[in-house]
Amino acid sequence: MAQNAQEAIASYITDMLALEEHMEKAFAGQLTNVKEGRFAGVIHELKAVNESHLRSLRDLADRRKEGGQGIAEAIKGAASSVLGMGAAAIDLVRSEKLPKNLRDDYAAVSLATIGYLMLHTTAEALSDAEVSQLALTHLRDYAKATMTLFHAVPDSVVAFLSEEGFRPADGVANRVNATADGIWRSGAS
Image (tube, rainbow, N blue to C red; front, side, top):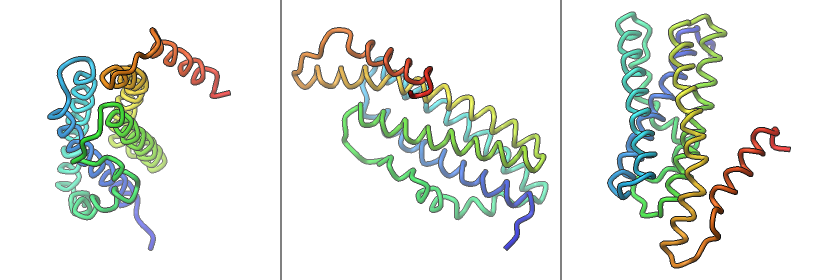
């Protein structure tokens, strides 16, 4: 069945809204379990970005609904479709340690990043400047969040190992981050 341009864009918007809502619950759950400090700050930053994205997506959906573009109706079924995209990897009620939470946050943020890239591409291809700009803004936010998480994970693993009674080598998190940064800069060669 052929879609019109508004329906095509609406389907991506509803997917992103459902994913952001799922991530909101995961971040809130993690904040109740993490102690204060650097890692709590990372999760607070993720939650703040997520809340901003939710506001702008909901505002967009409301504006489009008022304009007769039908995004709000499609939202009802979007939650189940986003779970099929892989967001179910974030378990809201798990008792895992911080490194695994950050790993799962990285996976969710990466999924959101590629989703916003797809939304941006769709909006550009179908000449929807408002959605294109929103998607680009969210893409930038999550690209930054991806790198924040990427650098937090080695520190969290070292902290976890220390808590478990191991004696990690001095400076290992910094060395791992430097190595990983080099890999990214060199194009993963």
